[in-house]
Length: 300
Picture 1 (cartoon, helix red, strand yellow):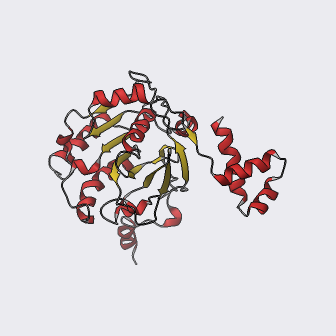
Picture 2 (cartoon, helix red, strand yellow; picture 1 turned 45 degrees about the vertical axis):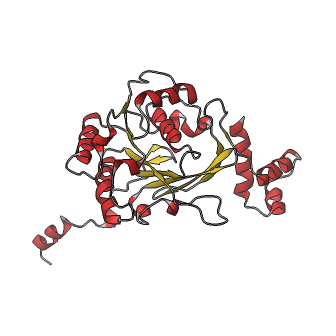
Picture 3 (cartoon, helix red, strand yellow; picture 1 turned 90 degrees about the horizontal axis):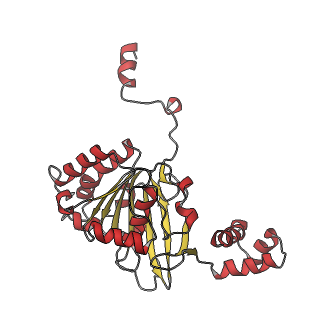
């Protein structure tokens, strides 16, 4: 290979060992990675839209009551900034009512950041690349938001959700923009119906193409349970987690739900037994014992 050939080759290829490492990037630590993220769950009782709104409020630099305080603490919001909110099921005034009286947020710009709500969400239909999608990308270029919310995705297109190519053409330009600008595009989406005997949803239960998991940088899957929800996460670059929460909306106090195992472990901790002995007796990993203690501390 001549020097000219090598130079031409290296214009299109990168030697892995000479590349600059790129760590995982987050808008909200361990919740919203940079890129494309799905917030999926069944209608209504999973409170997907309320959770999306809480993420918007946190990204804009304000507090809300929905999640335990540590989950959306300022330290976990890596880059606060403006938010673009395309809501096909609620007007700006309705979202503000929920923010103020449902989530305990304050009115006005916080630290100079705004949450901009589309007046006519149908102007931003994603299946119209030369119209709606182009308008949305133009708005993103103008505002340079840290977070863009599409709620719900199904109202913003009429393509076949099982067509991986159609979904990719709609979403990939938005993901590319988000990665380039260290932002997150969060879309709210529905799940399929649970099978017989199933109680919780998985990331692969998102309605439509099975290629969703290849497209997204993270999925937050919401399962409504009795009096609380279970959130299961999957990230391309980050540790997954599963957590059961009482959501702090409209007067309820946000808290992590202690399982039967947690309560058993904590009773043994209070009796003075060591973490190692508790793990052995309960036949659980030591991390389960330690996490039970952390949950109790976080709930105080």
